[in-house]
Amino acid sequence: MSTLHVAIARRVDAFALDVAFEAGNGVTGIIGPSGSGKSMTLQTIAGLATPDRGRIALDGEAFTDTARGIALAPEQRRIGYVFQDPCLFPHMSVAQNLDYGSKRRSDAGTVSRDEVIDLLGLEPLLDRHPHRLSGGEAQRVAIGRALLSAPRLILMDEPLSSLDIRRRREIMPFIEALHRRLDLPILYVSHNIDEIVRLADRVVVLHDGKVAASGDVAEVLNRRDVQRLILGEQDDDASTIIEARITRHDAAYGLSELGFGDTLLTLTRIDLPSGSAVRLRIHARDVAIATERPQGISIQNIIEASVAELRPAGPAQTDVVLSIGKTQALTARITNRAVEQLGLVPGRKVWALVKSVALASGADMPEF
Image (cartoon, rainbow, N blue to C red):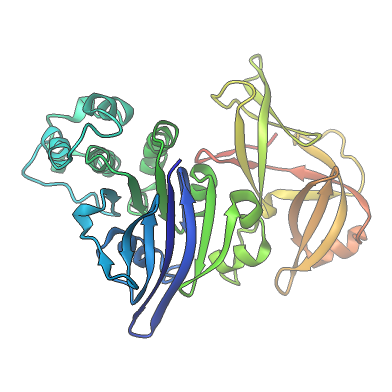
């Protein structure tokens, strides 16, 4: 089990970065609004920038320690860095770009060349040059080149930000495969909550150059103050992240049943075996409330709940926090008029109608 320790401070003009966190094996998501210091943090860890003070160490080996005068060069740190732009060599084929990474390493590395090619689906691309690759294909090659440098740590700086929705969905499964295969720390920077929900084991939230929150993905990203930091005060994307498990598949109707606590949700079939853990993101705008159990309605996900809290959400709307069972919660965003007409107060029994669910797989699930 590897552990990365980061405690750094750096000032650039009026911006001050001052962050401290730890990251173990698996994916640590780093999220925050633009200008919060995400890329600067990665650059400093990689040795591309020097902190004014602080220490960066992997398994006790210092990459940077200003108190002791230690500052390893980037190439001495054995870090695989994947940028927003793939930065492939245009005069080299895909195979040659991959081999460039392997030639720079001093040992056999974590994964072999053949494994990388198979893991990232690169076999059909090996003879092509970068100008003949789609954005998603080029980014997969860039990831492969980083892996073949035998890294002890991987840094990924918004690798999907320049891709359209289709290409993001295309490359996401490959990044998930890396997560399952590699036994080393991966820092994944994004400003997109859905990417972090899907990929990360834990999350660090940056705001104005400081760590605003860190810890379990669902626990941290369900905090309303954290969502506002990421989305801004005028957000319309409030949501609840739920960690669920596939209980069974209904082959006749092409559906999957998911359980969280004592509650079940039905979604279009998820191509994972029963028992698999998944994360769901349910947008508050996609949850309706009824004071009586509806009959004769197409929405199948109807959950008994009680009103836990009413939170103002702008001049005309309210976020209604619902308690489900003993430990689960769900948020619905409805108009102030609806709150008044339904007579919603804390403790009132209601039914939540989940109109759609965003599975952490890049696709919204339709109504049920």
